[in-house]
Image: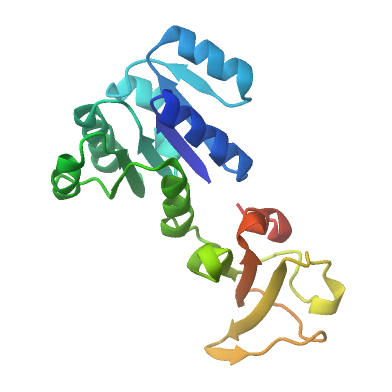
Length: 220
């Protein structure tokens, strides 16, 4: 997932660190030069110095290609502006705004911020649950603490798995294909069940392995 994080303070730093650990592709915008250098030295991610409320800075940071934008600055007003620019000017699918003052939560929602939150871990979970891709869609989490996730994977045209049976695939033990929908019909897969283009697979995966879905199926 391509995510633009604006604000490299404590919340932004640990958010970016967590996103990298989860296999995502964050870009970071931060106005403080020393903070930019520190983050660039510690993490191998693109870091852009500048005011996150600037259209030019956001554009240079690749906001137009982002699946989501997360504004984590220490000013709710700036986070609101960043989210509004992302949504209205650049057409970003999902915006997340950090709330420093809980009283601003309702106002931020009314003014167009998709998800106003405060917790770093909560931000990561929301991003992974709310942002859908053409081929991969988060459905729900189950189990104690949401440690298992149901994910729908659509097999695109020309995919390398098309025509192969489940027994021919080397899938992780933490990943199980529990159902296949084909031409409107639901199938319970067996070892000799083949996968074809256009199939919708319902996959259950452990939370700590969920980011391997893209790698396993070769989808981005």
